[in-house]
Amino acid sequence: MKTCAMCGSNDIIRQENQEDTTKFKVGNKRITIHLSGLSWSKCQNCGEEYLNPKDGNLRDQKLLEALAQDRKKRGLLTGEEIREIRESFGFTQVEFEKLLGLGAKSFVRWENYKTDQSKSADLLLRAIKKGGKDFLLSLIEEKKIA
Image (cartoon, rainbow, N blue to C red; front, side):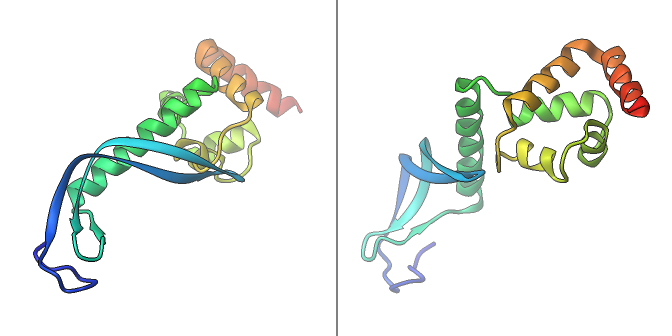
């Protein structure tokens, strides 16, 4: 980028290995996330910042890593761990939600950090992972009986 789209200035400087703080909504709360190692271009005249696709991808990656760390600190499975458990049994998000009697889009929200899973859902997912296929089959059988 050579010219600022906001003010027309040609005084755009590349910023490397920067830190930033952002707010991220998780469920009904907003959490503050600190990110480091980011890059962008900045207009020295008006302060407008520009991310190229590589910068944006890196920012997204750093944000997901920070959200995963936040969940780990609170003793919850990360979005990646939830996805791995679900996929290890060959279920889509919708299929696993129906099997476990969860609301629509629960796995989408948990896996993408839009909301945190409850402690009880987290415990159930851990039990499914540890218990393996036999435990999951017993859950399916119990659901049929109920």
